[in-house]
Image (cartoon, rainbow, N blue to C red; front, top):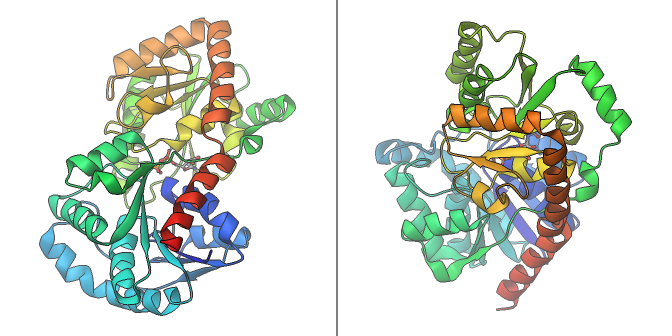
Length: 381
Ligand code: UDP
């Protein structure tokens, strides 16, 4: 099967890292079209996945854009749309992986009569999208998509609650290659030494720096924990959240935590870094569509505490495979961190069980098989 994948971002967020895995089996007869250039294009090339950047003009529509801004920016979609129409004619199916990709993919599907699949990696709700953008997603998906792959039941429910056609949806969780998360204990010790964190209790936070990812909540919690607890923030501001980054640095100084908080920037060695941590914290203040970092921590055998909303609730079984705390509740988070620190044997057992469960439940081979079967049905139809 020949698939034309579409994604709006040149930067590797969770949706893009998922697409990397989904597109891999089709690399000999597929193409990824991007609506922006950047490190994600390089990552695809490193994996020998054919990729073309469809425009060199930035598309201004943001998730929070209103109707006027969306209309004003619609002209910037013309070039990538024409390219997508021209390129997709050689393929059997268009696979839109993000919201702007859905806009381009839907029109291309109308003009080429190719079937369209939309992989939904978002919670379609006011927490994440303006009313205009919610309407655009729902209208285009209902009208043009043969199927909508939701990355969690939470994403599926939000889509349906916003007016999306429930009959078109299938929930398929992100898949992972468990072997990629096996890190030798010698490597773990080496990493801890390199980071200068050997005798500390280390909490890792792996996410782009963005207000709704709640890095400030972990900093608040850290101030309530004992002095040997430190936090590593792995990730960068990917989508223009520089003001938030400044705010985080200011908060660290105000709370006198300079020695206990380290910002490592964007890293591509996630398994090595996670394995070096004693705990991974996920602190999103709005419902997380899926939460790849939660599964990745489990696969590394690292205990994980997550904010109880959206997809995170489907990934963590409280006190069996991890811990859940109310979103935005830094006191409760500090309390759970202290408990985990005090009871390392129990938390180790929980992390071990989580590793086994995650290996079974979020296996890339299985999810790619599910997607392949779904696409076969559509193409044959
Ligand atoms: N990630 C990464 N480098 C970083 C920070 C994060 O590769 O410095 C990865 C992380 O391992 C995860 C993804 O980015 O696979 C984030 O996905 P998630 O679903 O947690 O959040 P999203 O970006 O989709 O909101």
